[in-house]
Length: 435
Image (cartoon, rainbow, N blue to C red):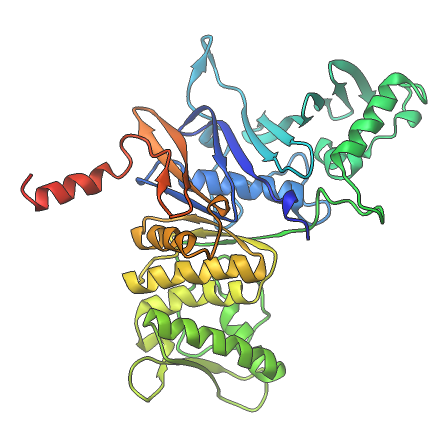
């Protein structure tokens, strides 16, 4: 895998509380911090959608079916997403998302997608790709035609094709077969040159730019517990419903893998103070028969997962999914839910180690100072480099929100800290000290 093809920035324009264009730097560890209702979940949901569009499975979306409500997110219809504002006495008619790829090893690339409204739902109204000082833009006109604009030179294509599929699959456009262009024309040569620059290749001819990197959003509240589980098909879910079934099947069919996973889970459990051991108790001989999840907390006896602190069950899906993954980007919403500060801090260290050892990446919405501070400590102790961490501070200002990009120095100190950051905590400390 080639890390330079992970997005390095993500932008939103005219979406909900974001006026104009707001950009967040994306790193292996990206922390989203700020008060409630400042757009952090909107940022995660839109990032998830655009990541799937450019890095997902083959043919993931149709132009008339972009799902802004795929679990665990729910942004609503077009009018719920676009900012309620007027420009030049006209209500905003579109919103835009942008992914940026900016690494020393290759030219800077930017993908812009703008959405308009059809029948109350968002649909693509333009796709613009930029490489340094050159651009290529696709604009649907009707169901049967679209325009292609290369550096200001426009051609109309009378052809039925979905614009996003053009982008995802080498543009899907053969200029020589079009009635609107001539073979070997300057326009078609420019298109071919842009295509080659956008879809970089290695010596074997394999494209680098759009590898199938996985994205795993995890919900802020994980699956409800069951005292006894009846085996069903393992289906991945943001709430972690699949985790009990996965653990049971590992104990039955992949003993070595289960032993390795259990060892890592127990190591975290002890460091965090959550549990001392974990077991799968099968209630029959066959894999299709019920089973229970049991943990040892402080005594020598095992207890059903339902009978111990809620933090264990809320943390377990995150631990298992991360330990079973490589080269995956996880979107975590408030992973600290129901965790003691000690466990919150250890969870942060666990995620840092996953970045270093398994090349996973994390975009984390959090209200936990313990997670933020442990990430800073991780940089100071050289678990990660400062450039591996981005802290996005969502700062409300009257009727809009600004995203501040905070970085760390090699000692874990915050750089570029704006006025207002952590004001609440300073005021509370002053009150406590009678200032």
